[in-house]
Length: 484
Image (cartoon, rainbow, N blue to C red):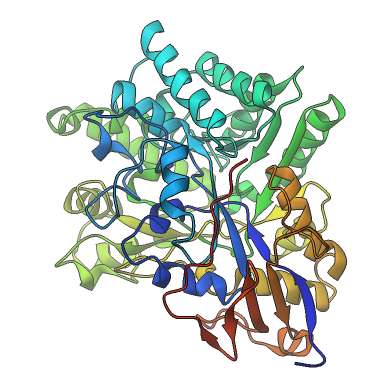
């Protein structure tokens, strides 16, 4: 193999593949990422980890926020990092680190109740998270737009952040809002909701040495793009004050979420009977109408990825298209989809960003790269499973992104250092032999977004050839658990 470029194996710092690493047949869920050159994953993000709950809790079914879950296809149930890491070590294609999810720990002690935790419940939740950090979890993740993380107040989040400072591990955060207008705050006017959400995290981190990781720094809706400069200023100010703040991005302009992501917290916390009351329906309609106008993001931007068996005819169509086909308003169609999916449906949404923002962020010294993607058994896939990392490399070669050395460092050594991953991310003596080989000409000349990877020639994980000549080693189990 001549004329190729060799790099350390790529590290995906924002993944949910903890749920698929414990699948009875994990390989199909990793193959698209292997073809991108990814050898290691930091999993358990957005508060939705497969670990971090009490043994025997009746709330196991609450884990995963509707996107994931223990639903019979896993090899077992793993409440803590120790048992999870033991379960995946040498049994998956790629290397796995895992974060302890705040949503999982909170659900364990209080289910999905929309309320403040009692003092006893909070101490139980914090004890769960601390024990997992001791066991080798790479940090703690927050999902403040997902149930039950959204019900946590600022004081509760501060206690979680204190744990991360104590153990010098990152706190990764899906904030309460990633758009100028959201359903997380009652006021539609005034300071952008995205910036308010960042302000909350800045208040929590201020005066500490917290490793604060802003997950998927995106700007949902065209009306949110103008918040980009102020968001960067907030991160820069935190760093100037001693907080170790960074952020991560994917090279896509849309993303995946649960169908309920745009429903207000107050509406989601209601019973079905309360939702049907005329005043609550009117209040919801008024809020959604105003938000759509102010946000620059509507039901024609929400593509249905999966509702459930029997609803395949919805897939790949926007809510607006389906509303027209069914002769009803967009909102009624949206709520119909929520009900038909038992509020568990999946959507692809955009725009989350622009090419210009991606190219600017690629060069920022506080930026890391990731996919935030996973393979689904049914429905429309997230395009980031196919070619997200090759597109970062291609941007570098075309002069749109950072230099090639910096681009490689972000997705290897810098990522390993950020999450305390030892002996990976570098090609040097003493490091594990995670290696990605790529063809620069093929990267430069490729046409992206074709539902396939490009430019990656070979991948080695812990010295074993995982991808070669376009073929992936069958039934590969060369991946190792990463204990931090």
